Amino acid sequence: MAELQQLRVQEAVDSMVKSVERENIRKMQGLMFRCSASCCEDNQASMQQVHQCIERCHAPLAQAQALVTNELEKFQDRLARCTMHCNDKAKDSMDAGNKEPQVKRQLDSCVAKCVDDHMNLIPTMTKRMKESLSSIGK
Picture 1 (cartoon, rainbow, N blue to C red):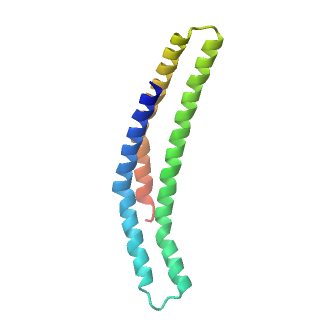
Picture 2 (picture 1 turned 60 degrees about the horizontal axis):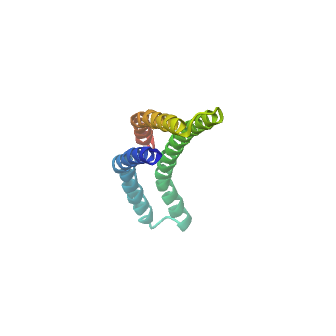
Picture 3 (picture 1 turned 180 degrees about the horizontal axis):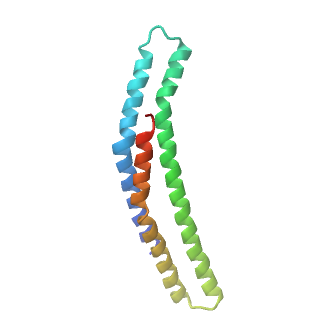
């Protein structure tokens, strides 16, 4: 049961990441490479100036990647906290003398609710990420 729930979340997150990469990150990568290439075409610039120019070209993409990583980490942490709460409740229920099948059902139900709640957060997280990404480098 838990593996199935994990797979559901993983597929939804993978789909969201692919969408963000295709619609936002890929365009930024193209801009970064074109910008970096133009830095190299300046024959009057010193090696250090070219290097600094390339660094400036890379900055928006690095910022975008950090933003996506941060959002995904926060999402993962929230989901982990929710499932840890389910595990704590299951342990407490076992300690109180409840039978294992009943506790397992409660645990599965709790984890499924965590997953459902977090799946519902993905569209909002995606929208927030895309809005933030579109403002980078402007």
